[in-house]
Image (cartoon, rainbow, N blue to C red; front, side, top):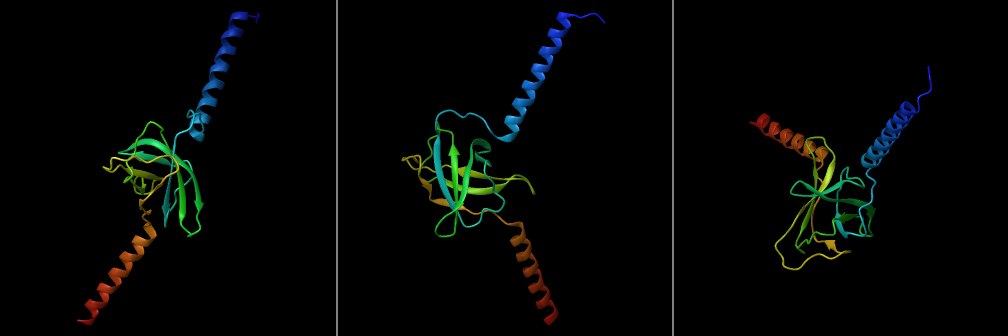
Length: 157
């Protein structure tokens, strides 16, 4: 086989493009990336966050507008969730945050519901209106408890 500089160049470029694609996909799947300088940082306090994790999406009307930046436990033993939101958004002060699940057994995310107030949230503000994560286990236990009490009444009659 004779050496061919053109073939070597094409193979080298092909390998570089492949490595670039692998690097890009690794960064995107890992959730890393440059978002630009700063953004709107909001906080929300919840009694129960279920399986919410750092880097979970924050959505408005099904559109991703940010991500969960961190989760800590505050002094009152509530989950203190840091939300990193797109800096272009202007959210009213009566905006509410709810932890929801994508599908029946899917990942959890935070859904923001903008209010109608004329004042807007500023960076560092805590969202006042929150709804906790719905726990499948607690729903099943309530269902079982209610069905057991119903059977007990039938047996008495």
